[in-house]
Image 1: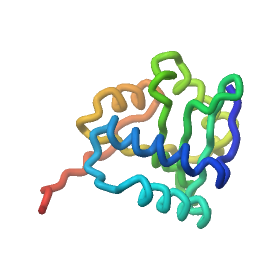
Image 2: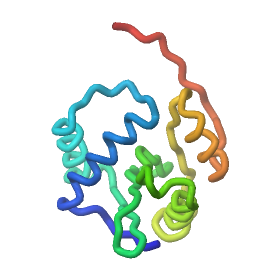
Image 3: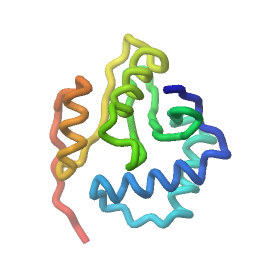
Length: 140
């Protein structure tokens, strides 16, 4: 597996994957493709968030979108293309992030929607521990 920093030319791919991620995790996000694309473009251009694209045999298969602060690395989005799941690619990508991309001295955080039990299981296997549960009363 290889990796590289995402480029402007990756925006359509990242947006399509983000759209799939929203559906897969059951997120309540009504944003259209164009809105998602603009949001990702803004994040990357502002350097608030960084994106890494992972490839196997020159085929892009996954991405990670994260923010590094003084205190921690927050993984905002992590996605493995549907036809590349359950093959160890997510684990391999996380290993690269932890050993080659992210500094070793900072805590790692990720948010997981409560209904996304597969993601919760994956993140626990990656070493993440639940430290807080955010609860809300949805309002229309």
